[in-house]
Length: 219
Image (cartoon, rainbow, N blue to C red; front, side, top):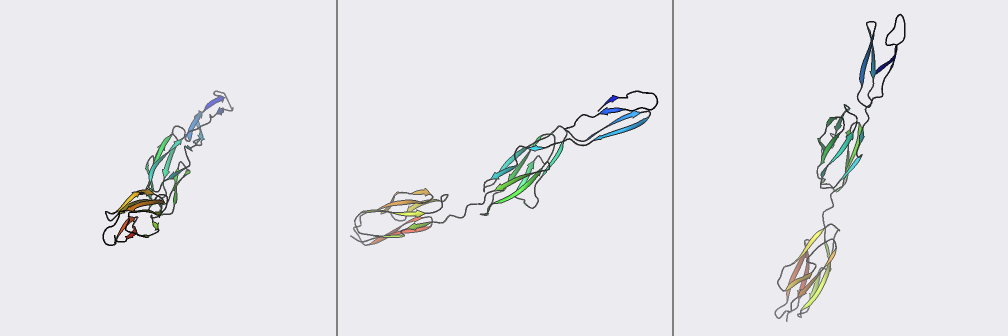
Protein backbone atom coordinates (compact mmCIF):
# COMPACT_ATOMS: atom_id res chain seq x y z
CA UNK A 1 0.00 0.00 0.00
CA UNK A 2 1.25 3.46 -0.77
CA UNK A 3 -0.10 7.01 -0.54
CA UNK A 4 -0.35 8.50 -4.01
CA UNK A 5 -1.44 12.03 -3.04
CA UNK A 6 -2.27 14.07 0.05
CA UNK A 7 0.64 12.87 2.13
CA UNK A 8 0.70 16.29 3.75
CA UNK A 9 -1.73 19.21 3.90
CA UNK A 10 -3.27 22.12 5.75
CA UNK A 11 -6.99 22.33 6.41
CA UNK A 12 -9.41 19.88 4.87
CA UNK A 13 -8.15 17.65 2.12
CA UNK A 14 -8.10 14.19 0.57
CA UNK A 15 -5.61 11.39 0.92
CA UNK A 16 -5.43 8.97 -1.98
CA UNK A 17 -3.76 5.58 -1.80
CA UNK A 18 -3.07 2.53 -3.92
CA UNK A 19 -3.04 -1.12 -2.86
CA UNK A 20 -1.04 -3.68 -4.81
CA UNK A 21 -2.62 -6.96 -5.87
CA UNK A 22 -2.04 -9.83 -3.44
CA UNK A 23 -1.42 -13.49 -4.18
CA UNK A 24 -1.00 -14.33 -0.51
CA UNK A 25 -3.08 -14.38 2.66
CA UNK A 26 -5.21 -11.49 3.83
CA UNK A 27 -3.37 -8.46 5.14
CA UNK A 28 -3.93 -5.04 6.67
CA UNK A 29 -2.34 -1.60 6.57
CA UNK A 30 -3.08 1.74 8.21
CA UNK A 31 -2.83 5.42 7.35
CA UNK A 32 -2.55 7.87 10.24
CA UNK A 33 -3.58 11.49 9.63
CA UNK A 34 -4.18 14.18 12.22
CA UNK A 35 -3.90 11.66 15.03
CA UNK A 36 -6.57 9.39 13.55
CA UNK A 37 -6.02 5.98 11.96
CA UNK A 38 -7.60 4.75 8.75
CA UNK A 39 -7.34 0.95 8.41
CA UNK A 40 -7.19 -0.89 5.09
CA UNK A 41 -8.09 -4.62 5.05
CA UNK A 42 -7.22 -6.63 1.94
CA UNK A 43 -8.82 -10.03 1.52
CA UNK A 44 -6.78 -13.12 0.74
CA UNK A 45 -5.38 -13.48 -2.73
CA UNK A 46 -4.37 -17.10 -2.22
CA UNK A 47 -5.04 -19.43 -5.13
CA UNK A 48 -4.36 -23.15 -5.00
CA UNK A 49 -3.70 -25.74 -7.69
CA UNK A 50 -2.99 -29.47 -7.50
CA UNK A 51 -0.56 -31.39 -9.68
CA UNK A 52 -3.27 -33.99 -10.32
CA UNK A 53 -6.96 -34.31 -9.55
CA UNK A 54 -7.20 -38.11 -9.27
CA UNK A 55 -5.26 -41.33 -8.76
CA UNK A 56 -5.92 -44.95 -9.76
CA UNK A 57 -4.70 -47.59 -7.28
CA UNK A 58 -4.44 -51.34 -7.89
CA UNK A 59 -6.39 -53.81 -5.77
CA UNK A 60 -3.22 -54.66 -3.85
CA UNK A 61 -3.09 -51.14 -2.41
CA UNK A 62 -0.32 -48.59 -2.65
CA UNK A 63 0.82 -45.06 -1.97
CA UNK A 64 0.73 -41.79 -3.83
CA UNK A 65 1.28 -38.07 -3.55
CA UNK A 66 -0.02 -34.82 -4.99
CA UNK A 67 1.68 -31.43 -5.03
CA UNK A 68 -0.03 -28.23 -3.88
CA UNK A 69 1.06 -24.99 -5.54
CA UNK A 70 0.19 -21.66 -3.92
CA UNK A 71 1.71 -18.39 -2.80
CA UNK A 72 4.07 -17.88 0.10
CA UNK A 73 2.20 -17.73 3.39
CA UNK A 74 -0.98 -19.26 1.97
CA UNK A 75 -2.20 -21.89 4.43
CA UNK A 76 -4.08 -25.05 3.49
CA UNK A 77 -5.20 -28.37 4.94
CA UNK A 78 -5.72 -31.85 3.53
CA UNK A 79 -8.31 -34.22 4.97
CA UNK A 80 -9.52 -37.71 4.08
CA UNK A 81 -13.07 -38.98 4.28
CA UNK A 82 -13.51 -40.48 7.78
CA UNK A 83 -16.04 -42.94 6.34
CA UNK A 84 -13.31 -44.44 4.13
CA UNK A 85 -10.63 -45.52 6.58
CA UNK A 86 -8.90 -47.53 3.84
CA UNK A 87 -7.45 -44.31 2.35
CA UNK A 88 -5.39 -42.12 4.68
CA UNK A 89 -3.17 -39.06 4.50
CA UNK A 90 0.29 -39.95 5.80
CA UNK A 91 2.02 -36.57 5.49
CA UNK A 92 1.22 -33.03 4.45
CA UNK A 93 -2.08 -32.75 6.31
CA UNK A 94 -1.36 -29.05 6.81
CA UNK A 95 0.88 -26.63 5.00
CA UNK A 96 1.73 -23.04 4.21
CA UNK A 97 2.92 -22.18 0.74
CA UNK A 98 3.54 -24.91 -1.82
CA UNK A 99 3.92 -28.46 -0.51
CA UNK A 100 3.15 -32.14 -0.99
CA UNK A 101 0.40 -34.38 0.38
CA UNK A 102 1.16 -38.12 0.62
CA UNK A 103 -1.44 -40.84 1.10
CA UNK A 104 -1.71 -44.61 1.44
CA UNK A 105 -4.44 -46.98 0.27
CA UNK A 106 -5.06 -50.37 1.88
CA UNK A 107 -5.51 -53.53 -0.23
CA UNK A 108 -9.04 -54.14 -1.51
CA UNK A 109 -10.14 -57.69 -0.74
CA UNK A 110 -13.55 -57.21 -2.36
CA UNK A 111 -14.08 -57.93 -6.06
CA UNK A 112 -15.87 -54.60 -6.51
CA UNK A 113 -13.98 -51.37 -7.14
CA UNK A 114 -14.23 -48.51 -4.64
CA UNK A 115 -13.57 -44.77 -4.56
CA UNK A 116 -13.07 -41.95 -2.10
CA UNK A 117 -12.14 -38.28 -2.08
CA UNK A 118 -9.43 -36.32 -0.29
CA UNK A 119 -10.10 -32.62 0.18
CA UNK A 120 -6.83 -30.78 -0.40
CA UNK A 121 -6.65 -26.99 -0.19
CA UNK A 122 -10.39 -26.88 -0.73
CA UNK A 123 -10.24 -29.03 -3.86
CA UNK A 124 -11.45 -32.59 -4.40
CA UNK A 125 -8.79 -35.19 -5.17
CA UNK A 126 -10.39 -38.50 -6.22
CA UNK A 127 -8.92 -41.92 -5.48
CA UNK A 128 -10.27 -44.96 -7.34
CA UNK A 129 -9.19 -48.49 -6.46
CA UNK A 130 -9.64 -51.64 -8.51
CA UNK A 131 -11.49 -54.61 -7.08
CA UNK A 132 -9.65 -57.84 -6.36
CA UNK A 133 -9.80 -60.45 -9.12
CA UNK A 134 -12.33 -63.22 -8.46
CA UNK A 135 -11.01 -66.51 -7.06
CA UNK A 136 -9.45 -68.75 -9.70
CA UNK A 137 -11.49 -71.73 -10.88
CA UNK A 138 -10.32 -74.42 -13.29
CA UNK A 139 -11.97 -76.88 -15.63
CA UNK A 140 -10.32 -79.58 -17.72
CA UNK A 141 -11.55 -81.37 -20.83
CA UNK A 142 -11.70 -84.22 -21.20
CA UNK A 143 -11.53 -85.38 -17.61
CA UNK A 144 -10.40 -88.94 -18.32
CA UNK A 145 -8.91 -91.19 -20.97
CA UNK A 146 -8.89 -94.96 -21.57
CA UNK A 147 -5.66 -96.30 -23.09
CA UNK A 148 -4.36 -99.59 -24.38
CA UNK A 149 -1.28 -101.30 -22.97
CA UNK A 150 1.12 -99.75 -25.52
CA UNK A 151 3.01 -96.54 -24.85
CA UNK A 152 0.62 -93.70 -25.67
CA UNK A 153 0.70 -89.92 -25.76
CA UNK A 154 -2.20 -87.53 -25.42
CA UNK A 155 -3.30 -84.15 -24.13
CA UNK A 156 -6.14 -82.34 -22.40
CA UNK A 157 -7.17 -78.70 -22.11
CA UNK A 158 -7.17 -76.44 -19.06
CA UNK A 159 -9.66 -73.56 -18.98
CA UNK A 160 -9.32 -70.68 -16.50
CA UNK A 161 -9.13 -66.90 -16.28
CA UNK A 162 -6.19 -65.07 -17.85
CA UNK A 163 -4.58 -64.20 -14.50
CA UNK A 164 -4.86 -67.67 -12.94
CA UNK A 165 -1.69 -69.76 -12.65
CA UNK A 166 -1.60 -73.55 -12.46
CA UNK A 167 0.74 -76.54 -12.46
CA UNK A 168 0.19 -80.06 -13.77
CA UNK A 169 1.52 -82.90 -11.62
CA UNK A 170 1.31 -86.64 -12.21
CA UNK A 171 0.55 -88.90 -9.26
CA UNK A 172 2.27 -91.99 -10.71
CA UNK A 173 5.68 -92.63 -12.26
CA UNK A 174 4.43 -94.28 -15.48
CA UNK A 175 2.31 -91.24 -16.45
CA UNK A 176 4.57 -88.30 -17.34
CA UNK A 177 3.70 -84.69 -18.15
CA UNK A 178 5.66 -83.87 -21.32
CA UNK A 179 4.43 -80.31 -22.01
CA UNK A 180 2.33 -77.74 -20.18
CA UNK A 181 3.65 -78.56 -16.72
CA UNK A 182 2.69 -75.02 -15.69
CA UNK A 183 0.86 -72.08 -17.15
CA UNK A 184 -1.18 -68.96 -16.60
CA UNK A 185 -4.60 -68.68 -18.17
CA UNK A 186 -6.04 -71.38 -20.40
CA UNK A 187 -3.67 -73.90 -21.95
CA UNK A 188 -3.01 -77.55 -22.70
CA UNK A 189 -1.19 -80.37 -20.94
CA UNK A 190 0.52 -83.14 -22.88
CA UNK A 191 1.36 -86.50 -21.34
CA UNK A 192 2.91 -89.87 -22.10
CA UNK A 193 1.82 -93.18 -20.60
CA UNK A 194 4.55 -95.82 -20.58
CA UNK A 195 3.84 -99.28 -21.99
CA UNK A 196 2.10 -101.55 -19.49
CA UNK A 197 3.26 -105.15 -19.24
CA UNK A 198 1.32 -105.90 -16.10
CA UNK A 199 -2.24 -105.61 -14.85
CA UNK A 200 -4.57 -102.75 -15.74
CA UNK A 201 -3.78 -99.54 -13.88
CA UNK A 202 -4.88 -95.97 -13.44
CA UNK A 203 -3.19 -92.68 -12.60
CA UNK A 204 -4.04 -89.02 -12.49
CA UNK A 205 -2.61 -85.68 -13.48
CA UNK A 206 -3.78 -82.94 -11.12
CA UNK A 207 -4.31 -79.36 -12.33
CA UNK A 208 -5.81 -76.63 -10.15
CA UNK A 209 -7.46 -79.16 -7.88
CA UNK A 210 -8.97 -81.04 -10.84
CA UNK A 211 -7.95 -84.60 -11.75
CA UNK A 212 -7.41 -85.95 -15.25
CA UNK A 213 -7.64 -89.73 -14.91
CA UNK A 214 -5.86 -92.16 -17.21
CA UNK A 215 -6.89 -95.82 -17.15
CA UNK A 216 -4.55 -98.16 -19.00
CA UNK A 217 -5.27 -101.74 -19.96
CA UNK A 218 -2.98 -104.58 -18.90
CA UNK A 219 -0.35 -106.15 -21.11
